Amino acid sequence: MRISRAALHFWEEPCISGTGGSGAIFFTGCNLKCIFCQNAAISENGPGREISVKELCDIFFDLKNQGAHNINLVTPSHFVPGIRESILLAKEKGFDLPFVYNSSAYESVETLRTLEGLIDIYLPDFKYMDSGMAKNYSHAADYPEVAKIAVAEMVRQTGSFVFADSLMKRGVIVRHLLLPLGVKNAVSVIDCLYDTYGDNIWLSLMSQYTPLYDSGTLSSEQKKRLAPFPELHRKVTKREYNKLLNHCFDRNIQNVFIQEGDVALDSFIPAFRN
Picture 1 (tube, rainbow, N blue to C red):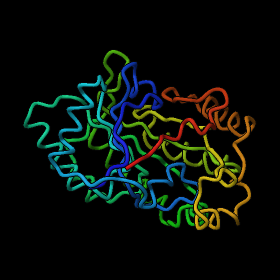
Picture 2: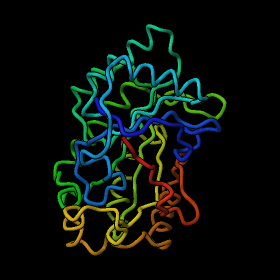
Picture 3: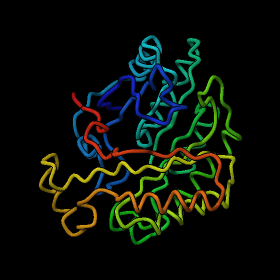
């Protein structure tokens, strides 16, 4: 396993970060290649250090001692076997914080089933219902079908959500990052989820898309991949985001997190290091 960062994180949904922060562990690499990835510095085999099962277990306890409300496993899919062993080891030692599985939802159901009983909260993205967008932006035309099956397995494992002291202890929160010119796709995502699960899951609708094309942070290869898609070179407009929110209000969706103000800021991108 390789990790790029382990620290308290205060910018997740309020029921995840709380007041003490979420114990976020950012794993190096990713099983998707989204051309707009805000964590591209680590998602494409960037900085990171190798750790053992025991070392990861020790990190769980260290984050707990710092006051973390939970352990937030960020982009963990490709290291599940080691993560599973670390969780089992931690539980043998009496570890009692919830584990959050924070992923792209581009997941194998067989892999998810190896985590049954070990993950308390699933925090997947649901990026696309439009397979064309999925192909162009993430090189995964099959993303919509894969994600639907994966989210179904996540909901099956956790059941109805549970809160205590304003913190989620169990359940599923599905995120959707609105992209420029992406309202139609976003509405399809919301309709699919709400038609399937109603208010048994939470939604989190994010407007924080940060255009990186002219930021100077991308490699020449990453910039080359973004070049053919000028729509991704700008922020999401307030009008676009309000359209999505109005759709949720029209459907009377109750359990939804929204973002207010200008949140497309570089400050939302963590600093990664070896």
